[in-house]
Length: 405
Ligand code: NCD
Ligand code: ZN
Ligand code: ZN
Ligand code: ZN
Image (cartoon, rainbow, N blue to C red):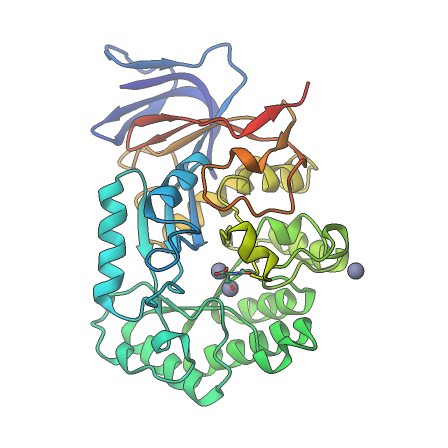
């Protein structure tokens, strides 16, 4: 098939042209490609842009165990709906993903759903208890990309030090949910900062690789920038919500880490501009209304990550669309070792078609995800997803938005 006459934007190119696709893979990209294809998608005259589909380094599909919040089917559909064709899933399921068997089972079931690619992370300690890491010792080199206890930090410095040693040997990236629970009740800023500083020190000492999840404070992002500049192998993500709104503005909508202050937003955006932030990740954390009332932290993210990020970063002129593509597609795809994240020959034909000029209101009732939990209901945004190609197959966007005329 061929996609014709569309503005193609990725991290290194921006032009109007065509894409030839063969068996789900890009066969050619260019201007006025020779065209004898039976299946043609011609976008001439339409004010839309084609981007490489997004990759989310951080999502919760709640499967197994909490499938009333989300499952592999609803999660896959929410991802596609938001322009994501690849996701990295967190292990705080029930049972916890503490074994390779369970990791493989989740990945297999998502493959059977058949609309996205998933990597399931393995818990860093058994059942997220913060103590036992025996299961890591049995791993073969490169059998697992990431380990994480996301949802919790590992408080014990000795345990963390041992985990760094094992992961160094097996070339595994540690994903840190930096929250020292000794401070959680009293000072959530200190909780994030102290564990970020500790993990940076350990990473430097053991020459490991660490990725910081949902960085949210000025102190944490500045420390990460400092260690990166020293050459320590550290990467980080920020979420759309942490760069969009403050605790005050949302009546302290519950999420971990909490929504912070304007000075933190400014520091995170500065870090995005300076290339310190490797990825925008959703931390898609679906919950039922009842669970939210009972205090469950988190918000659904997959279906509004692009419009929130586009509106906060590109519409305001803080970064270019190419820079946004780099942190939503190119770098996270590379970190997951996928053949995607750019529009180029030999890469997967995974694209998202967006319309950038018409504002609309977020309507969470229309989310495909089971989780309707968001503080962004009614927020005016730009960056509407019109369609998504995955391995050359077009999925029409399900409507979750109301036009704002
Ligand atoms: C996440 C969840 O619900 O699993 N909640 C959240 O507030 N972010 C856990 C996490 O990412 O820490
Ligand atoms: Zn977390
Ligand atoms: Zn307040
Ligand atoms: Zn999370």
